[in-house]
Length: 115
Length: 112
Image 1 (cartoon, helix red, strand yellow):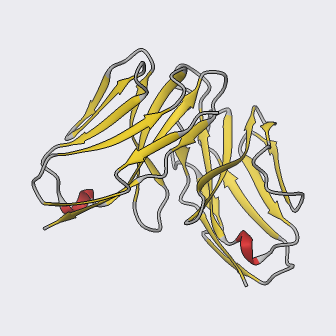
Image 2: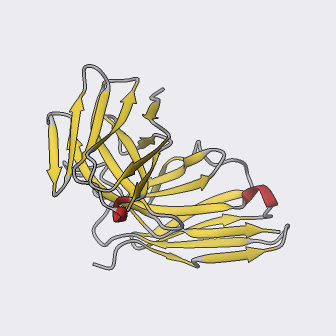
Protein backbone atom coordinates (compact mmCIF):
# COMPACT_ATOMS: atom_id res chain seq x y z
CA UNK A 1 0.00 0.00 0.00
CA UNK A 2 1.25 3.51 -0.80
CA UNK A 3 0.19 4.87 2.57
CA UNK A 4 -1.82 8.04 3.07
CA UNK A 5 -1.43 10.36 0.12
CA UNK A 6 -1.78 14.13 0.39
CA UNK A 7 -1.68 16.82 -2.25
CA UNK A 8 -0.32 19.31 -2.82
CA UNK A 9 2.81 18.96 -0.68
CA UNK A 10 3.37 22.70 -0.66
CA UNK A 11 0.92 25.52 -1.26
CA UNK A 12 1.66 29.22 -1.33
CA UNK A 13 -1.30 31.53 -1.76
CA UNK A 14 -2.38 35.06 -1.08
CA UNK A 15 -4.75 36.16 1.63
CA UNK A 16 -8.36 35.87 0.55
CA UNK A 17 -7.83 33.02 -1.88
CA UNK A 18 -9.53 29.65 -1.61
CA UNK A 19 -7.30 26.70 -0.71
CA UNK A 20 -8.21 23.03 -1.15
CA UNK A 21 -6.15 20.28 0.41
CA UNK A 22 -6.64 16.67 -0.66
CA UNK A 23 -6.20 13.32 1.01
CA UNK A 24 -6.42 9.69 -0.04
CA UNK A 25 -6.52 7.34 3.00
CA UNK A 26 -5.11 3.85 3.16
CA UNK A 27 -7.43 1.41 1.42
CA UNK A 28 -9.68 -0.39 3.91
CA UNK A 29 -9.35 2.22 6.65
CA UNK A 30 -12.69 3.55 7.86
CA UNK A 31 -11.48 6.55 9.90
CA UNK A 32 -9.97 9.69 8.45
CA UNK A 33 -8.51 12.59 10.42
CA UNK A 34 -7.40 16.12 9.55
CA UNK A 35 -4.79 17.78 11.78
CA UNK A 36 -3.01 21.11 11.80
CA UNK A 37 0.51 21.56 13.21
CA UNK A 38 2.07 24.88 14.19
CA UNK A 39 4.98 25.81 16.41
CA UNK A 40 2.68 27.69 18.77
CA UNK A 41 -0.08 25.10 19.27
CA UNK A 42 1.51 21.82 18.25
CA UNK A 43 -0.68 19.16 16.64
CA UNK A 44 -4.41 19.93 16.70
CA UNK A 45 -7.23 17.68 15.53
CA UNK A 46 -9.54 19.62 13.22
CA UNK A 47 -12.14 17.02 12.23
CA UNK A 48 -12.53 13.30 11.79
CA UNK A 49 -14.77 11.01 9.76
CA UNK A 50 -15.98 7.46 10.23
CA UNK A 51 -17.31 5.67 7.15
CA UNK A 52 -17.33 9.02 5.30
CA UNK A 53 -19.52 10.69 7.96
CA UNK A 54 -18.13 13.61 10.00
CA UNK A 55 -18.06 12.56 13.67
CA UNK A 56 -16.43 15.50 15.43
CA UNK A 57 -15.66 18.88 13.87
CA UNK A 58 -15.20 20.75 17.13
CA UNK A 59 -11.58 21.48 16.25
CA UNK A 60 -12.42 23.36 13.07
CA UNK A 61 -11.31 26.90 13.89
CA UNK A 62 -14.12 28.80 12.21
CA UNK A 63 -16.60 28.81 9.35
CA UNK A 64 -13.88 29.51 6.83
CA UNK A 65 -12.84 25.87 7.21
CA UNK A 66 -14.86 23.01 5.75
CA UNK A 67 -14.14 19.33 5.12
CA UNK A 68 -15.83 16.70 3.02
CA UNK A 69 -15.46 13.00 2.40
CA UNK A 70 -17.54 12.09 -0.65
CA UNK A 71 -16.31 8.49 -0.70
CA UNK A 72 -14.05 6.10 1.20
CA UNK A 73 -10.96 6.98 -0.82
CA UNK A 74 -11.01 10.77 -0.90
CA UNK A 75 -11.35 13.76 1.41
CA UNK A 76 -10.85 17.50 1.07
CA UNK A 77 -10.17 20.30 3.52
CA UNK A 78 -11.10 23.71 2.18
CA UNK A 79 -10.24 27.15 3.53
CA UNK A 80 -12.19 30.06 2.10
CA UNK A 81 -11.09 32.81 2.39
CA UNK A 82 -7.56 32.03 3.58
CA UNK A 83 -5.71 34.24 6.08
CA UNK A 84 -2.02 34.47 7.05
CA UNK A 85 -2.77 32.85 10.44
CA UNK A 86 -3.85 29.71 8.58
CA UNK A 87 -0.22 29.10 7.60
CA UNK A 88 0.69 25.68 9.02
CA UNK A 89 1.34 22.09 8.08
CA UNK A 90 -1.89 20.16 7.53
CA UNK A 91 -1.81 16.41 8.03
CA UNK A 92 -4.28 13.76 7.04
CA UNK A 93 -4.28 10.43 8.85
CA UNK A 94 -6.32 7.24 8.59
CA UNK A 95 -6.97 4.23 10.79
CA UNK A 96 -8.98 1.03 10.94
CA UNK A 97 -11.74 0.82 13.56
CA UNK A 98 -10.91 -2.68 14.68
CA UNK A 99 -8.95 -3.86 17.71
CA UNK A 100 -6.01 -1.65 16.81
CA UNK A 101 -8.17 1.42 16.33
CA UNK A 102 -6.44 4.71 17.16
CA UNK A 103 -3.39 3.35 15.34
CA UNK A 104 -3.24 6.24 12.96
CA UNK A 105 -1.09 6.42 9.87
CA UNK A 106 -0.12 9.88 8.75
CA UNK A 107 0.41 11.37 5.34
CA UNK A 108 3.44 13.55 4.55
CA UNK A 109 1.48 16.74 5.11
CA UNK A 110 0.74 19.88 3.12
CA UNK A 111 2.76 22.94 4.05
CA UNK A 112 0.48 25.93 3.55
CA UNK A 113 1.79 29.48 3.42
CA UNK A 114 -0.70 32.32 3.18
CA UNK A 115 0.91 35.65 2.29
CA UNK B 1 -10.45 16.38 29.18
CA UNK B 2 -7.36 14.27 28.55
CA UNK B 3 -4.03 16.09 28.81
CA UNK B 4 -0.72 14.59 27.72
CA UNK B 5 2.63 15.92 28.90
CA UNK B 6 6.07 14.96 27.65
CA UNK B 7 9.27 15.55 29.56
CA UNK B 8 11.86 16.69 28.70
CA UNK B 9 10.97 19.04 25.87
CA UNK B 10 14.45 18.63 24.43
CA UNK B 11 17.28 16.22 25.03
CA UNK B 12 20.84 16.08 23.68
CA UNK B 13 22.96 12.97 24.23
CA UNK B 14 26.21 11.50 22.87
CA UNK B 15 26.02 8.58 20.48
CA UNK B 16 25.78 5.17 22.15
CA UNK B 17 23.92 6.35 25.24
CA UNK B 18 20.74 4.64 26.42
CA UNK B 19 17.92 7.11 27.06
CA UNK B 20 14.35 7.37 28.31
CA UNK B 21 11.60 9.67 27.12
CA UNK B 22 8.65 10.25 29.41
CA UNK B 23 4.95 10.71 28.73
CA UNK B 24 2.21 11.29 31.31
CA UNK B 25 -1.55 11.53 30.88
CA UNK B 26 -4.30 12.73 33.20
CA UNK B 27 -7.14 10.28 32.45
CA UNK B 28 -6.21 6.62 32.92
CA UNK B 29 -9.28 5.40 31.01
CA UNK B 30 -7.43 4.98 27.73
CA UNK B 31 -7.82 2.51 24.89
CA UNK B 32 -4.19 2.49 23.82
CA UNK B 33 -1.06 4.63 23.58
CA UNK B 34 1.08 5.27 20.54
CA UNK B 35 4.62 6.62 20.12
CA UNK B 36 5.47 8.49 16.93
CA UNK B 37 8.62 9.87 15.41
CA UNK B 38 8.67 13.08 13.37
CA UNK B 39 11.66 14.16 11.33
CA UNK B 40 12.02 17.86 10.42
CA UNK B 41 9.63 18.82 7.63
CA UNK B 42 8.12 15.34 7.50
CA UNK B 43 5.00 13.54 8.66
CA UNK B 44 4.60 11.32 11.70
CA UNK B 45 5.83 7.73 11.65
CA UNK B 46 4.28 5.26 14.05
CA UNK B 47 6.89 3.50 16.19
CA UNK B 48 4.98 1.45 18.76
CA UNK B 49 1.37 0.91 19.80
CA UNK B 50 0.55 -0.39 23.29
CA UNK B 51 -2.98 -1.59 24.01
CA UNK B 52 -4.40 -0.69 27.42
CA UNK B 53 -4.14 -4.34 28.53
CA UNK B 54 -0.42 -4.50 27.71
CA UNK B 55 2.55 -3.43 29.81
CA UNK B 56 5.14 -2.99 27.09
CA UNK B 57 6.01 -3.32 23.42
CA UNK B 58 9.40 -3.76 21.80
CA UNK B 59 10.70 -3.05 18.32
CA UNK B 60 14.43 -3.36 17.71
CA UNK B 61 16.24 -0.90 19.97
CA UNK B 62 12.96 0.65 21.13
CA UNK B 63 10.95 -0.42 24.14
CA UNK B 64 7.77 1.32 25.28
CA UNK B 65 6.14 0.68 28.63
CA UNK B 66 2.71 1.59 29.92
CA UNK B 67 1.50 2.05 33.50
CA UNK B 68 -2.15 2.98 33.16
CA UNK B 69 -2.84 3.33 36.86
CA UNK B 70 -0.17 5.97 37.29
CA UNK B 71 -0.85 7.59 33.91
CA UNK B 72 2.66 7.10 32.56
CA UNK B 73 4.50 5.70 29.59
CA UNK B 74 8.18 5.62 28.77
CA UNK B 75 10.04 5.12 25.52
CA UNK B 76 13.45 3.55 26.02
CA UNK B 77 16.01 3.86 23.22
CA UNK B 78 19.05 1.63 23.52
CA UNK B 79 22.46 2.45 22.06
CA UNK B 80 21.33 5.72 20.51
CA UNK B 81 22.54 6.70 17.04
CA UNK B 82 22.66 10.06 15.20
CA UNK B 83 19.88 8.74 12.96
CA UNK B 84 17.60 8.64 16.01
CA UNK B 85 17.63 12.45 16.08
CA UNK B 86 13.99 13.55 15.66
CA UNK B 87 10.98 14.70 17.65
CA UNK B 88 9.20 11.90 19.51
CA UNK B 89 5.48 12.30 20.16
CA UNK B 90 3.30 10.36 22.56
CA UNK B 91 -0.43 10.05 21.77
CA UNK B 92 -3.20 8.58 23.91
CA UNK B 93 -6.21 6.89 22.32
CA UNK B 94 -9.60 7.43 23.92
CA UNK B 95 -11.94 4.57 24.76
CA UNK B 96 -15.07 6.02 23.22
CA UNK B 97 -13.81 6.48 19.71
CA UNK B 98 -10.69 6.85 17.65
CA UNK B 99 -9.50 10.27 18.73
CA UNK B 100 -5.84 10.67 19.75
CA UNK B 101 -4.60 13.28 22.20
CA UNK B 102 -0.99 14.25 21.52
CA UNK B 103 1.76 15.49 23.78
CA UNK B 104 3.97 18.34 22.62
CA UNK B 105 6.90 16.06 21.91
CA UNK B 106 10.51 15.61 22.95
CA UNK B 107 13.13 16.87 20.52
CA UNK B 108 16.04 14.42 20.62
CA UNK B 109 19.52 15.15 19.30
CA UNK B 110 22.11 12.38 19.26
CA UNK B 111 25.60 13.76 18.75
CA UNK B 112 28.25 11.71 16.89
